[in-house]
Length: 619
Image 1 (tube, rainbow, N blue to C red):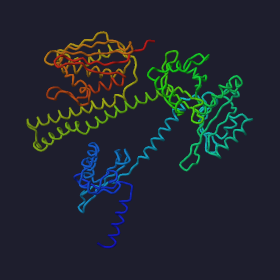
Image 2 (cartoon, rainbow, N blue to C red):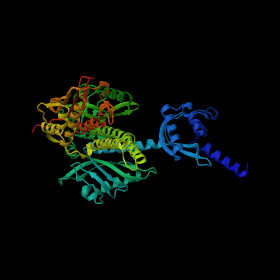
Image 3 (tube, rainbow, N blue to C red):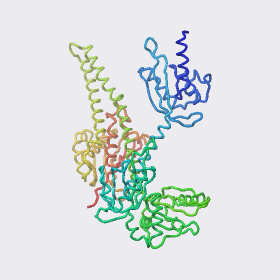
Image 4 (cartoon, rainbow, N blue to C red):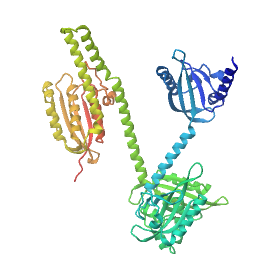
């Protein structure tokens, strides 16, 4: 071997063996043919133990091995690299997150002869990203939930970038350099700037009580606290601050000396209502915010045991355990629990407690309480939105699958028969040629029907008008008239009894009724169709349950959910015409109206399709 080649080999092996990244190679049967030291360490195996084995044989979980097998097949087929992220356990470090790339190794003929892979541990980066996102989420929640002033300053405090005054002082949503004259009383400006300069010099929190100009032009007092946000080099990038209105506390300072001391300590914790438990007597002391939050008369705080009963019965053990553990260990706590106010309302409370210890003994126990009900409600609504998005994504996946598979069949039929016509009957069509043409047209018609149905399905959310009060009797009458020809052809009898007014979209509800009634006629069996539409109030009068009953062939209860899936017809085209979209479209329409749809049936016993619509509110 030439000296230069040997040198290059040693250099290559040194690089591969010393890198913390995982470097490896597969043959086309998914077997490992190379693994560097980092990968062997992750497996906890030697080179001899692992070479020639597939991921399954090495111990990869089935889903993990199957995923890589699919990716290897993809690289072989496309001759293009594949990149992805995956989480799995390291032999020593536990669960880690990895970024990996599979790339083709081509022979002289340009064919894939092996798959080369590299994998990098990105766990720390992912954790950092998630921590930043969570931090931003908590800050936004704090801004929305807090009743205090929130502001942002430039690194040197020369610019106020943002201020939400909460009706106490004027808002600022654009950067301004004149903030001292706008907000700070002239007699306090020098003292404020001295405190700011010291905070900048030491990169520590800014805390100060000072006078401010209020929205109404009056003079007020505020306790302002700001903390520096540092970059990775330790430099200040901005200041985030909160300011509490302490005007009344200042006015009553002599009478409320103890309450002011408690408030100042509470403000240092969370800038919200505070409480204190006397370690010796177990007496409870509250700030005014707590009385207001719990809707309790501010005459006297209840004993500790009685105060605990104000929490939701399921959360009382959480609070009791947190308080007892803090008093025993001196450790702080931070929990979110429910309370019942005097009016019976259930609200969410963020409860924080910070014991003060001297020589390992708890000498005082203070904390803060914040109403986070609105934040919890936003989180609940957000979860509903996410759930709906997930459902929508699932439908889109079904749509994509249908577009790439089911919709191709009619098109292939059209193409095949048209090709036969062209190849066999180029000069003139005889009877057989006409038959081929008829097949082709039929295929095209079915394809068009499927595409039209899918188009309607996809436009339910985007093309529907807003909901309004609709006369369902009128909708039924219109649909009955539209189906008149089919009703007469099948000698069908379709009746309805006093349908109500409900909130809905006229066009979509007509489509809903037409699909359900058309199905009832289509699947009536050998006897003339008998269909009845009825309605009854439900949910305390807030919604209507509309039912379409027939005496047709019925549905196996085990297939009840399947009938609402796209292209999931229970019968072949030879038995009954249809695209398999009609009931899926009905479900989509009802979901847009905020309702539910279901079927109750037994084979040979007919079916009852029911759905809910919101009732029209009383004026």
